[in-house]
Amino acid sequence: MFVFEPWHWLVLGGILIISEMFLTTFATLWFGIAAIIVALLSWLWPLPQVFQITLWLILSIVMVVLWFKFIQPLSVDRTKSGLGGSVIIGEKGMITVEPITNRLGTVRFSVPIVGATEWQCRTRGETLEVGQRVVVVDIIGNELIVAPVADNAHVDPR
Image 1 (cartoon, rainbow, N blue to C red):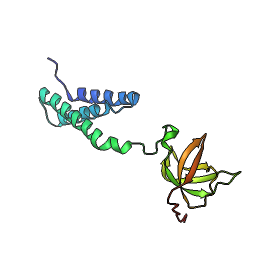
Image 2 (tube, helix red, strand yellow):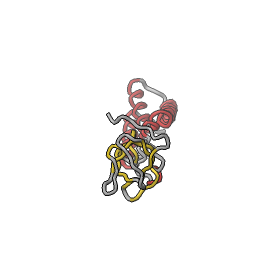
Image 3 (cartoon, rainbow, N blue to C red):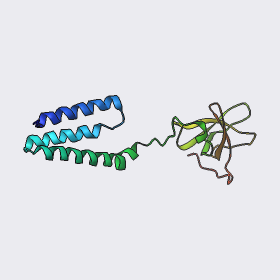
Image 4 (cartoon, rainbow, N blue to C red):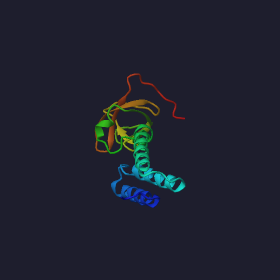
């Protein structure tokens, strides 16, 4: 009958953690860490084989649940980077450089939108001032078409 020695768990853990470099899904990382913990505990105290396997399964499940519940939500990309341009339409920002007929203006958002906090913008004929709040109504290439927010709220740019 095969008996798991502590070094077996250590090798299994190492293989699972190294395989994570190729998978990049965090699918095997937690199983590898659990195997290394079982290896350390087996070195400290001789554990029956059934208990080693049960401990490995329980630790793996607990770590996967903790990953999905607490750690993974921290890695959500709130910049909307990589999404289509339609995610920008409706976003509100503040004019930092006035757009005029022959020159683009600049609009700044409080959080990055598709990876940037400042975007070049133009209007559909409206006159805008620095500090005025605007909403994105359309996109042409890398330029945003903005319109004044209905309440015409001005924000002190300082």
